[in-house]
Image (tube, rainbow, N blue to C red; front, side):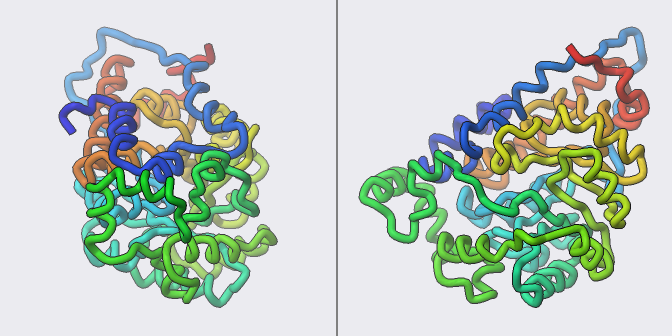
Length: 382
């Protein structure tokens, strides 16, 4: 990990260690990948303001969001199939996050389910992702499982009414891995260390799908679970979930101020400004461009998290100045996991934290709280 000096270095190392099928899965987006690209490129449309001759000899990166204080304004967001990128990936990521003093969210499509992750990380703050399924009884089971595991928040993901074409996955046959082709086998077997890591604990399966009897093997289980996601989900379902779930409720997938206000009215404790990492509606706004209007719409009455395209510490600083309570990252730590397991996840977190720290100092700020208080006066649109 010492040769990885930024998130891009972790990405390159991950690409050398993963089969192409899985590196494409992490990297790819939907259709033309316009929104995927905009998530990263739109940061360049902003500039930070630099103030000098201020005492920044000590700096405080801590932040409070979703009812708790954390060491950084950062969390690890939910990533499906995380355990396919590194051995016991969900457990390793949660352990690295806990050691760094930040929360992590276990995906509904996790290889290791949240109860197992919680058992092995009793001191870590865990959140649980939820997709509302057509089978409401099964949805209730998933909610109860998250509650029993001690999840501090439920992240209701609402931007997946359908799954669009992801052309990288279509070309490499990702969805057909239940019957790998000769080419796929050659690619997979060309990564022997990955193969060894994946087979040490038996055949990988999607934890929730296995428990629900959704077939055998990762791809069959994931496909059956995905087909259960309810495209008829509406705000009345959010009202039901708010009554059912006793802890923090976060709605993930908000891109419009109107929907942010509706989430607030529905009793959500927070939202995630998210376009699913550019993997859903291609042509949608980048999250950094959508953030200011959404943050203004809810005006400090709920936590506003944001994800999508964050690769540098200054990106995090910009989001905080534009009204975010914290940033959720996905690909950076997935690359870290693929590159070096738990140590790779820890490296991804440390890189972002170190860059955020130096960014604050060079802006003339001594704390995240000071950055958030300064808000839009500390940045300008280029």
